[in-house]
Length: 311
Image (cartoon, rainbow, N blue to C red):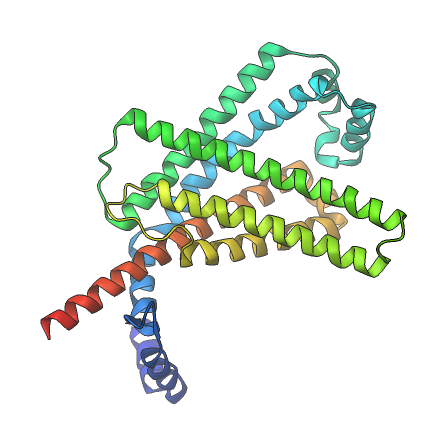
C-alpha cells in the first residue's frame, strides 16, 4: 500500500514527470535507446538478479584470501635484497595497532627464509582468490542470462589467469606510485619542481595510475570472465562507471582510516576487519553493478530494435 502511495505521489509530481520526459527525449548509444528505457531495465534487473546476495558471496571469498596473502608477503620479505628492510618492517608493525598483537609471530616469519611456508601461502591465497573470481564469473552468467558451456578446466584456467592479472596489476600500480614518488623527490631536490607542483604532480600521478589500472583490469574481467555469446567493446560503459566508483569508495575508506585517530582505539582489530569486509563488499557490489550496466544497456537496445522492427 505504501509503495502504491509512493508511486501515485511520483506520478502526480510535476517535477518527476518533467524528469521522466527529459530522460525519454535523451538517447544514448548511437541514439538507439533512451536514458529512461535503460534506467528502467537496469533497476528491474538489479532487483531480480540478487546483486546484494552475490556481492556478499564474492566478498566473502576474497576476504578468505587476504590472510594467506599477508603470510605470503611476510614470508617473501627475507628473500628481498633491500638493506634494513627487516628493521623498517619491524617499525611499521609496531606503529599499526592491528598487527601489534601479532608482532612476535610476524617477526619470526620475516626474520628467516621459509620456502615451504612461502609455497603453501601463495598456493592457498591463489586458490581462495580464484574461488572469489569463479563466484564473480557465475554472477556474471546469471546477470547476462547465459549458460556456462566452458569446461571445468577452461573455466578454472580463465579464473586463475584473471586472478593473477588482478593481483599483478595492483602490485604494479603500487610499484609505479612508489617509483613516481622517488622521481618527484629527485626533481624537487634538484630544483626542477616547486613544492606546490610536487603536491599536484603526486596527486595527478596517483590518480592516473590507479584509474588506468582499475579500468584495464575491470575491462579485462568484464570481457573474458562471463560466458558471453557476443562480446561488447573492451572499454565499456560499465567498466568506466565501476572504475570511478571503485576509486571513490577506496579513497573514502583510506580517508576515513587515515583521519580518525580513534579508529583502532575504539574498534581494534575486529573493527579493522569489519571495515575491510565492508570495503570488499562495496567493491564487489560495484563490479557486479558495472556488469549489470553493460547487460541492461544491451537488453534495452535489443528491445528497442525489436519494437522498431515490429512497427
